[in-house]
Image (tube, rainbow, N blue to C red; front, side, top):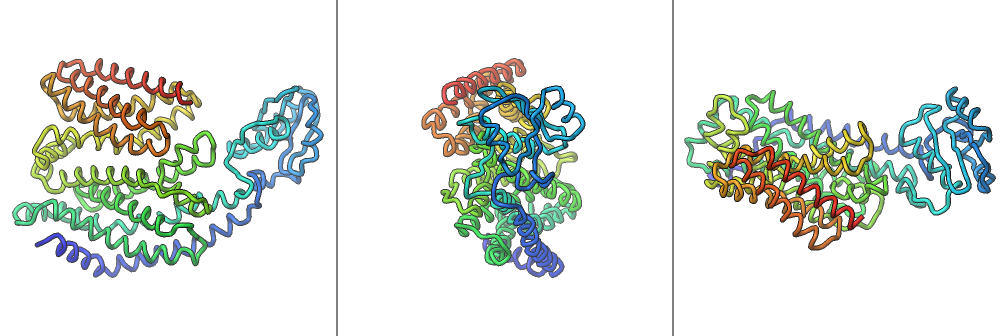
Length: 506
């Protein structure tokens, strides 16, 4: 049975499930009618800065000001800020009693803000600071990316768009779970091993049939959403993003379904992984609001969708899509290792070791498996790095040194974990396998970052060499039974390079 025939057979199975199609239709209708409700709610905000959304008093914000400044007269005329001139002791008493939103202590050149008298969110408190600063300081940098033609309404509309557009992917990606998990639960996979069909074609046909299903629904979805309030400057580009995200989630579902022991467990794991993927990309897109992190927002396809809604003329993120396809390919390789190899399928308690054995069974080479493990390590780096950076921010603060250290430890730690799975026995073998892991990791990372940070050779070549060298050291250390020391050396070397890069280009 050829690949095309198997795709058609699986696609027929999807469309013959009336209950599933009914749930898909119901889900799309609910989503469509949710869009105008959310857009109407967003439309209640006035054009302007974030203070437009804070109806806390007649003048929105009440500030106690300590000290004299020539521009205070202009601040007092502002129709959003009520100024109370007083001494520092009284100002702090008003703040403690919750009678003012904040205290601004000014001098001849600037000032310091003390907030949290009346509870405000961090975002709103920062907006208060911006509103006061623009009257008390000249040539200050904007805190938010709120252009004159992009008020709060358009900002929220653009940030909501990726979430609203990508939500249906949860249900569109379900058919592959039933297909794969059902076969594992009912031992149908054993029949696959006895059949003449190539195992890679069997899994690929399941993924492709689900992708065709998602592409058809995606086309209908892109046709309908403009009638309900979502308009895109480049609908075809957004559709490509939608299909690419669908392929990623479908392949991840294939992976978790291949690993899970039954359909119920697969559905739960799939829900968690899909939620993480969409939430991660959506969270990264929110960084566009802040000028200091605007570059990082470009690392999310959701940012492109947000920019299309905002009417910004932005180029299609080809390199970012290539990285997503690399992550998808690694997920497919892992899914294939679990779905179609005896090493995993017939193991009593299959785990990561059996996945690696499955990769060896498929690739038939330790070097190819090491190269593949580098892509696997990169594929799980971003979510772990986001968590690590978030913990540093919330527990310690925006310390550049600790942020760099956390990112470096995550990257070298994941590559080291891959080497621990590879288990090189000789020094030369460890150095070579480690270099291959680092090479694959570095290539993926450079593809992701090079279009964002234009550093030419330093971004495209040097980081690849750094990753290759660091992982080679770790691999050699594992073979010499000095793994921990070798990993620490790799972290310090990588950290030194990151500090050098930061000091020369920022």
